[in-house]
Image (tube, rainbow, N blue to C red; front, side, top):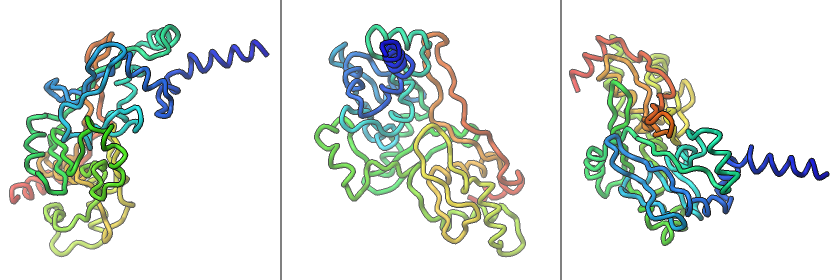
Length: 306
């Protein structure tokens, strides 16, 4: 009995400690956040977006650019995790990317993970500010993407919220009819409408495309593929859907990139690298590969008419 109990305690204290800390209902997370600095989320030029300030025992998360909150999200003792703060939590919390021995050692000695790691995004805050100013007080989304690399340079979703004020407004946000917690750029799904016209033109067909023509085109453009870029996104429409097709602004940005990229559809990226203690900045590769969506000559011709 004593031996089995000891083994069980060791299993939870060491082998499963990182999983326990990852649970948002574990009060140890909130305690660890006060004593262990969380990694920063930086833009592509290392300008802070989210960062931890203060001293041990009183660390707190500061959100330097609140308009990006629907994308970057938050970490909070009551409301848990959202956005990139949630999907990249392993690195930011220090339970991923640090040496295994360090994670186990800090867990045994202090009952906390080691200091978190900084993560660099593809976001350019200069372009992001312009995108947010463009949308203004309207409801909508903007995605600006490097057509060659798939790197997301700006991702705006309005209306949003200020994660620095979660203590005051956090309980009200899920009830808000304007859905400020939703990242419209990646999680909103909208009809294609006339936005599909340049792609249909790039098919180069002599007449009107059939349903089969359109479903084949939409498949190559990635409209039936759920983007995978280390963040929460909406599930893609069912394969073959034409009349009731819905796509996200992110999917449209990927497809539009094919027109500017000689017909090649890039795979999107938003998390570029993580700063590890042993190797410095380590690239986080794209979770996919580029694919040909359109013949180059057709894509170039369609792009020239935009």
